[in-house]
Length: 150
Ligand code: HEC
Image (cartoon, rainbow, N blue to C red; front, top):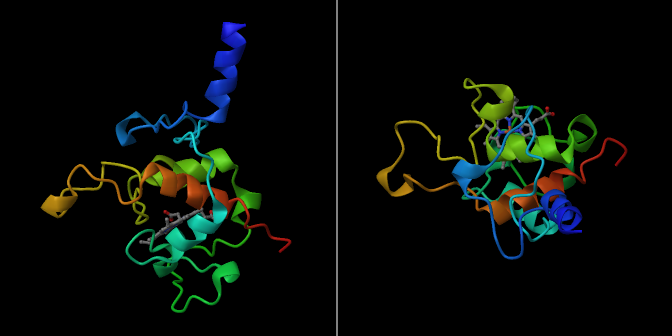
């Protein structure tokens, strides 16, 4: 009984109110299987993070048709339309948390929940992640809504 309960908690995410620290996120085969917060991701909040230039700033590089009211979308990276058909939620979590784990060291995509951000980091950002664990889950939830059929 105890073992079964434990297994349920592991697949559902971390236990109540907790979150996984950036250095403790477990990447396996380009996926992060376990949610890094106990609170499920909120797609509406995730859309705001994508568009916010001080947070995700995803639209500097990626275009998203579902957010077409946002001006100045980027084209240095693939459009995110249909991304939920190309990647599983677990893979999307890995891409957002630390793109290097999926695309390799050379990627220009920032690691949004990683402390491995390079050497020329402003002093006040050392030891901080760009997004919080909850913002990562919110973004992953929003990406999960981006299907080709829309
Ligand atoms: C500095 C540019 C840049 C920013 C900012 C950026 N990305 Fe990326 N992203 C890339 C590039 C480039 C790729 C393609 C993989 C590669 O070449 O490294 C990519 C790939 C992806 C992919 C896989 C796309 C596919 O269709 O295969 C997803 C999902 C993604 N990014 C999500 C995001 C999200 C969400 C944000 C904001 C939180 C973000 N990216 C911010 C550059 C960026």
